[in-house]
Length: 183
Image 1: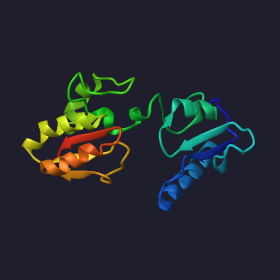
Image 2 (image 1 turned 180 degrees about the horizontal axis):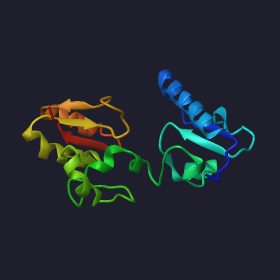
Image 3 (image 1 turned 180 degrees about the vertical axis):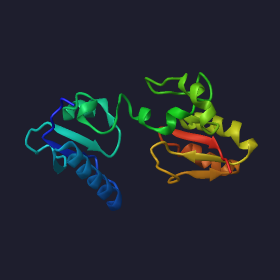
């Protein structure tokens, strides 16, 4: 490989359930053994300087990776993105229309390229856009509100009528994926 790492470290385990954090630690231990490198536990800024190989529990922001000294794909098992929304499921759904709110860097064309492999739905970056999406989708049946950083079925809510939908729209976090419910 040509890249020597003195130690493999876990990163960003804060806030994970105990069993999930333990799974990440065990994975990093096994990866260290495969790489014939030491496993140094969870990264702390106070650790002595080393050529760490990071195993983060989530996708890192570019700024964060740079601060950690991650210079290329050879320094981590994971990914790096320029903005948090890029690492979420929000990118798989388009915006309701060209006037919809979107953060800098949003690629309006991507959703059209993947629409045949995802549920029909939209991403909202404002409560007003969430209301407009709801008005379009709700007449066809129940819809699903899901914060993009959620995993699996957690934090999602199925909505079948306007009062519940309005409450979800009002509390929409900075982004929300809203899709027609299937099955």
